[in-house]
Image 1: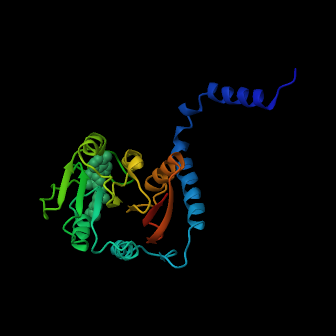
Image 2: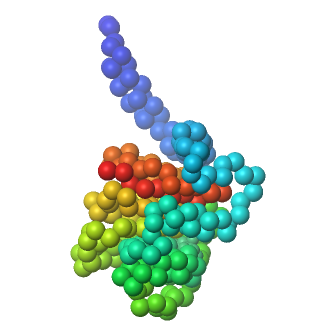
Image 3: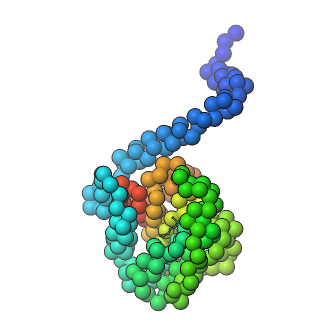
Length: 244
Ligand SMILES: C[S@@+](CC[C@H](N)C(=O)[O-])C[C@H]1O[C@@H](n2cnc3c(N)ncnc32)[C@H](O)[C@@H]1O
């Protein structure tokens, strides 16, 4: 009897599933996924431009304050210091980065929305356990600022029904929710509202299984094209421009 390649492939796949490796090899899935995503991240980094943009790769140590150098760079490159922006931040906590952006752009027509449970992370994230980063919801510090309290998964669709985020104002989307699930959910929910020139920033991008993985799943599935505006801390913080 002659087996074609397709029949052999189907037979072996079925046989492997029959052996139920998930019941005794499950401990390998975490390290294997991490290794695969780290390799993908490294390959992605090797394809990024270095010249003529802010990019500090490689640095032996992280300087978290450098994220504001990146934010300043975005403001200069995108000419948004004194023009109206629609700023959407996902993961606000005690509003450190949110307040920075309120200070950096003073245009009276700019709008700033911050989304968070304010009850901490909804899942474990590496060493951080569910509920880590709980913070008091910040009080509205500026009439242009509004905080939307709750899980993104519960609040974002209602927000999009009741707010026009496609009025032509440049969107600055700041992803600082750490988790794969939160990041992928927000990006896919916002996909249809993204316009040429909108900006997406990430605060923990080079974590292989989380923001990086969410970004690649999203851009590969939605055929979204982006170009790098800048990166600091070995791509821990990055900013992209949407290209359409
Ligand atoms: C790293 S903190 C944000 C830090 C803040 N941007 C700053 O600069 O200080 C991450 C936040 O994301 C929030 N978060 C993560 N996933 C979420 C989700 N699915 N819905 C709502 N909030 C979420 C957590 O509650 C947490 O406050």
